[in-house]
Length: 89
Image (tube, rainbow, N blue to C red; front, side):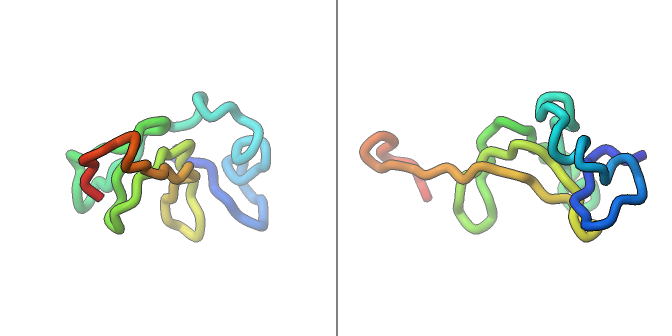
């Protein structure tokens, strides 16, 4: 079962079509991703702030497959120390 749209230059399956990748409303796509092999108890959801391994914050907007791996289309979050004092970066 394919649960994420695939970003690819060739289209052979319905999940690779531009409609599923670009036109389906984000809230109608798969809302969660987890690394089932390495960390199955950590789940990441669209529209929720996530902290990355390299110390950045981002908000995933949708999950996609690219070159056989899952990725997030995401919005990078900037932290303003004057607005959020004490945030550990």
